[in-house]
Image (cartoon, rainbow, N blue to C red; front, side):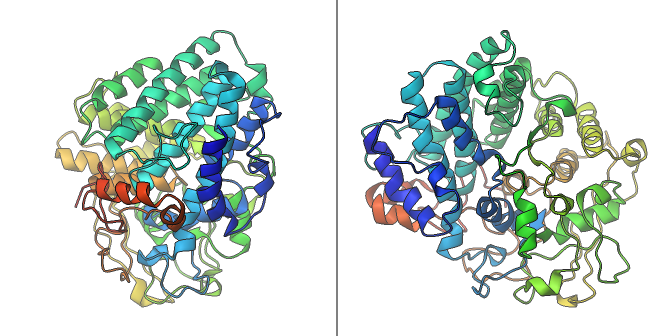
Length: 513
C-alpha cells in the first residue's frame, strides 16, 4: 500500500502543493505509516469531492472550467490575460488543479479504508462509491485515467483507456449497489451516520444515489458502449432518485459551514453565465429569482449574466453589479450534489432511445421540471409546462455591446409529440440543464455528447485547437504526470481519439460536432 500512496504523493499531492495548501493536512497525514484513524473518519475526508465546498476546490472545480457549461462563469484573469478556460487556453496551474485536488482527496484515504475494512462492509462500499463518483468526473474531463491498475505495488500507475475505465467503474458500482441494498434493510448505519452530511447514514438513499449515478454514466456512454442500455435499465429497476427528499446536498460544506460559492464570490470570481440567464429570460422562467440575484447596474432586464469568453479579458470590477448565483448570498446554504430531477430527465432521454425506463418521455420530462420547481420552492409550473410560445432569449450587455449574442436555439417548453427526435432531445436536455443548476459538468458533457443545450461560445478563441462553435473538449493531462509518471501518461496520450494531449481532442463518448 505504501508504494501507491507514494505515487499519489509524487503526482497529485505535489501538484496540490503547488497551489493553495488550505486543509492540506486533512488528506496528507504521513502516508508511509499505517493509518490509526477510524475508517469512517477517513471516509469523511473523501466526501469533499462531492460538492467541492473548500474555497479553492470550489474555485477550480465549480467555477473555472464551469464556464464551458453556460451556467457559471469566472470574470477574472488572475493576471493571465486571455490564457483562461474562457478562451479555451487555461494556464497549467488552472488546468491541473482539478486533477490534483480530486486525486489527493480520494486515493490516500481510499487505500487506508481498503486496508482497515478488508474490502468489506458499508464504509468500504461508500469509499468505492465516492471513488467512482470522482473518477467518472475525471474520465469526463480528461479521458483516460489511472483506475483499474491503481493498486498496492504500483509506484506509477498505468492509465486505462476510456472503454476500460468506464467498464471497470460500472463493475465496481454494481458491487457497491449490492452492498447498499443489503445494508438498507438494516436501517440507518451508525458508522456512516457519524460522518454523513448528505443522507445521515441512510443506505436506502445512498442506493438510489448510486443507481442514479449508474443511469447518468450509462446515458453518457450510450453512443459508444453496447452495454449502456442494460446498465440503464438495471439502474431504474434498482430504484433511482424520485422525490426532492431524495436529492443530495452537502449540508455542512464538509464541516466548514460556509459554502465555497460564497467565498469565491467574495473574491469577485463567480457570476451567473449570460447563456443560462438569456435562456431563462426568454422563457420568463419563474426560477430566476431562486437561481440568481438581480443585476444592480440599472439595466432594463432584471437578470443579466456575464458572457464567458468576453470580447475583452474580464475584470471583476466590471461585472460586480451583474447577476450572481443566489447561493452566494447566504454562506450557510448547502451545495447541491445530485438533484432528483436529474433521474427524471435521464429517464426521459432513455425513453427517447427506446429503452425501458418504466414510463414515457413526456411524463419524465414534465416530472423533471416539476421536481425542479419543487426543489427551489417556486410556483407556476403548470403555466410553464403549457407554454408553447416562449423561446430562449438573446443576450444584450448594455455595457459591452461586442458581447451581445443571438441565441441559436428556438426550442420551446411545452412537450410536442409531433416534434422530430432531435427537437425532442434538445427539449429534454435544455430543461435538464436549466433544472440542474448549478451542475457544470452535466451540462458541458451533454453539449459535447449531443450538441445540446446550445451553449453560447466564447467571442473568440486563443487556442488554435479549439474553435468557438465546438468549444473546449477536455482538460489536458497534468504536467506533474509528465514529470513523475512520464511513460504511462505518454501511453495515455496514444489512447486519445487523435493521439494528441490537446484541449480540442474529443473524448471517446463526446464526438458530436
